[in-house]
Length: 193
Ligand SMILES: [Zn+2]
Image (cartoon, rainbow, N blue to C red):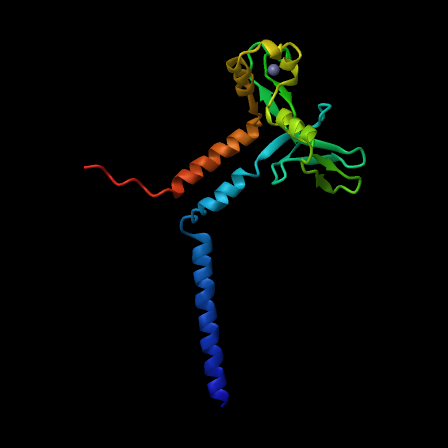
């Protein structure tokens, strides 16, 4: 009985040693396994983002599914992802020539004093009109000099096209890294004969 137990213990010990060896071999040697493309896409959605309040206060945070940051719940202040205006003649351009940055507050979303976000649904014609106004991205600086009633549809569209999401330099770098990583997950193209 005693010899059986000793033999069994010895065998378990040996199995344990082999397992430790395998774990060490996997952990210390060999190539790092490529990540699944889903994980890379998830990381793309979380890059550092500049959020702006309506009065221009800034905060940098990873992007989140709500696309907003509660800046000051007690004051009901929300920060929204920054946009930039690429109009070469934008009156908001900075002295160094860099584009004007602005936020787009969703008029149907608010924050309560306890930090909870509430979203109001659109139920009246006035709400619908408000939504239409919000849906069209507009640079507030350009808006001051625009005469919208005399603009052609093409000119109006040009103003929309000049407004783009602002990407922090650090986020652009990270996105490029993730794109390179994503490329590695794609199957190699078969050689053409
Ligand atoms: Zn502008």
